[in-house]
Image 1 (cartoon, helix red, strand yellow):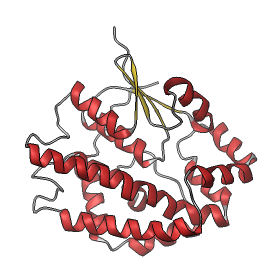
Image 2 (cartoon, helix red, strand yellow):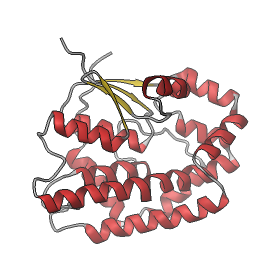
Image 3 (spheres, helix red, strand yellow):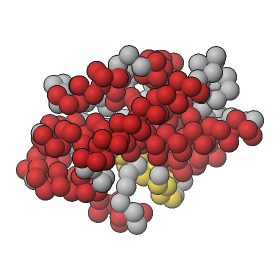
Amino acid sequence: MTAPPLLWHFPISHFNEKVRWALDYKGIPHRREALGASYLPRALWATGQPRLPILFLDGRAVTDSTCIIAALEDRQPDPPLYPTDPDERSHALALEEFFDEELGHPLRTALLGPVFTRDPAAAIHVLATGMPAGSKRMMLTVTSAFRAYYRRRHAIDDAAIAASRGHVEAALARIERELRPSGYLVGDAFTVADLTAAAILAVLVLPPEMQYAPSPPFPVEFDAYRASLAGRPALRWVAEMYRRHRGRSAELAA
């Protein structure tokens, strides 16, 4: 019997949420393992690269959320995340790439950069959401080193924090500009473009359907940034996408 897909993931990460949502949306039974602070050597050993998510699918390790969703589309086309119309498919994939690069990375910097600057322990509290308890304890015992590592790994500095908020504003404006009368970004149905944008922005909305939401109390900077964007139509749209399409988890019981 073929083993079910296994997802190595960071619970709080929006790129990992993309993959979880795709698995759940397609109803693909799978197992999950939150690697926590031990992820780096294990990811390197398994794939030769240092990032999550990693999906072990049909005997191979697939990395990068975009590549994983493409593999899931090939394996189980229904329900589809890629439009059948070639022009709409091209547009949906272009939006997926845009939100990954122009929203995903800047949003992480905009949210966590200021928190790491003032209160690294509070940032670790957010990052450790859904991880094994030992991972949070380990990160807290080496707070200064972890703070330096995280900022260097994601190129977070004062200039990057300032620029990142402009990128987030531009991405929200693009969602509001691209939305069609159907309520979706491409055509008349839910696609990878909607999934990607909503998954990345979920941490600003904290919809009730979010499976790995950080628990309060939140860092002051985290709450202030969320409050500054709370009235945006794009964020109301995120809540609606979660309400409509973030159904039951397909994760298998441990």
